[in-house]
Image (cartoon, rainbow, N blue to C red; front, side, top):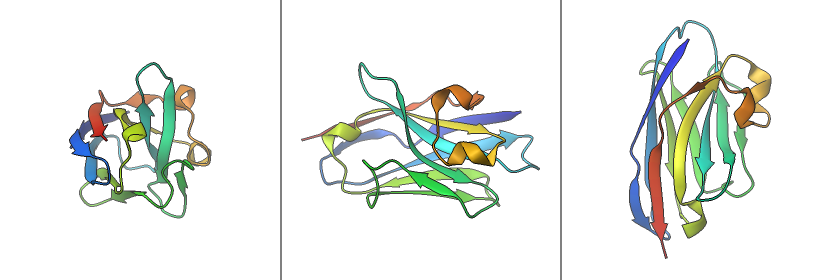
Length: 126
């Protein structure tokens, strides 16, 4: 079982940067696929980025490639999402999610992730 807690959301102007963090606790002796999902107003959860904690696998949605970087610090058990050159369409609630299958990191889909944080709001103004 995993417990996930996000932090670092806020408001930023277009072109600015923001970093989200997700503290991971629980049964962490195994490897996990950890991801960030974004839910924009009126839309479904969208897999933004994902990483396998054992290394070697990352995923980025086309809309965030070359702007966002996902990373996981094993020692601190912290997932991060560094967001640069932000756009108004990046606005939404960002959720940290995790589960145990590496294949989930290929294309993260909301319905297959079993563990979720409560989310943190990100607002990008133009």
